[in-house]
Length: 90
Length: 380
Image (cartoon, rainbow over all chains, first blue to last red; front, side):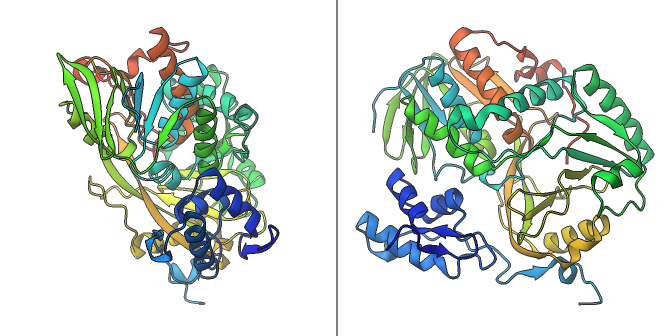
């Protein structure tokens, strides 16, 4: 994979940034998320989570099932504050 | 795992990592930091990350003022961009009681060379054009207050500390602390035991549990505070908006997302860090009333973290009088991130030199027994 390949499309995080975090010793998805913002955008990691998990597993020579996944945080899909507040127009 | 250390810090949040850095910078060798999860996994990584100097007590004003000075050069000092954004804090007064409290606060702040000022509703509207001023009586504004990225700041301190030789053990939990004749002897962890004459309790929401390990009852408790963040949008307003009577804080980060939270007075004192839809709904209602165009912005995530509360909402900093070598930097009451740069420096001075460049003896744990509480009136 090329360094400039975008892994997290919502936050524009490249493979190069994730590779650097791994090489610094940050080998959990939680740490990589906090350092690079990967998975913190609009889709909340729906796209990039699996790719990063796979790369962590490869980097650590572990099975993908051994890698801890971070807490899934609500909501599942973005929701307008107006809708949440019970705005009649929505 | 290392068998012997000159000092063990428990907690890999901003408090623990900044203390480790300052101790190492002052020449202390063989420092160990224990973190039961990963760095910034507790309150630091969950916080609103605001930095303000507008407080109601001299102690908090001075500490915050000095902290801002350190924050202003921190990216350079630690060689890591902490994304400091000084867009100010706009404190909104909706009741007469708040107006008189804010006048008192501003007088105190100005006497301490903090550039806060009391402003009219019109001036508040100029600073934040999308503000709905209905019900607003007045406001205060301090332009040098702001926000930094809590993850970056936490990792910046940790990596700088590691470059100075600090050993950080992630996923390593302190399980017990051994004392002899009321002196610290060692810390046992799930990875082995470390002999040390000094332990620093920087465990944030779990600091009370660490106190129990040396047999002392710390007058702190933990309480969930919920928070949510929106998708990134075009710049809408720069300052942190804050109200005590309406109970909220809200700020747009340089990234474009808008972060907001409030403290539920009915929140039980425990370790719950779940999220509720009731919070999200009430939060949305509160903020739409203040900035109506927020109704078009979408929330993408909500979470929560623990405030570690002390009886007077001020931190407890210093050595425990009954246990030699047991130091505490706990009970920050929601202000740990903003106070960390200065408190960590003072803590390092206290341990290595026995005195501090800013007096913090009043933050000792003994103040509760003496009845000398320094009650902070301005807390969300």
